[in-house]
Figure 1 (cartoon, rainbow, N blue to C red):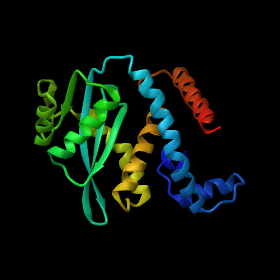
Figure 2 (figure 1 turned 180 degrees about the vertical axis):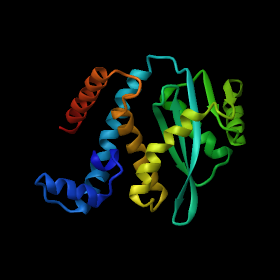
Figure 3 (figure 1 turned 60 degrees about the horizontal axis):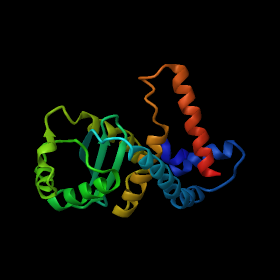
Amino acid sequence: MMYVRFPLSLRNVEDLLHERGIDISHETVRFWWNRFGPKFAAEIRKRRVCQWRGYRQWRWHLDEVFVKINGETHYLWRAVDHEGEVLEVFATKRRDRNAALKFLKRTMKRYGRPQTIVTDCLRSYRAAMKIIGIAPSHECGRWLNNRAENSHQPFRRREGAMARFRDVKTLQKFASVHASIHNHFNHDRHLNRRDIFKKNRSAALAEWRQLAA
């Protein structure tokens, strides 16, 4: 959990565990997150999807961010709901209509159709929405998509500690795991009172330990 949740390198996690009396190598940390990270993230995502299915999807915010892999530019698409919960991340080599269409279909298949979709002024979004038939629900503006823009920040901090990615497959895998674990432990500290935040944090940690058991 430490490696995915916090901006730490493999060797940082190795040193922290060594202080706690656990003697492992950084390659063991790499193996652990590759083996168990996707399983835990899938279980967290499954539980949250089951909860969201009972509620109407009000507003989504879609955005994409540039990611350099071996000197080549790739794109990480991100869908966020109106409360800042990361719904889906999707890595592609292009930023055209086909990529946007595939991203929208993938997200809507899991969460259903939202009432409103907010994006930036990228034309690929509108072209993809016309194919699906949801163009009337599309909104775009200069500051309307700040929620999606801000949701990139935790991932960007984590990317800096990892010294970038080696291929698209690794990017997709880590971004999905990071999004699920970030959602699980993100409790809007700035919006809740201290006692409420501590209860939510303890409940999230107890649920995490149940998943890891």
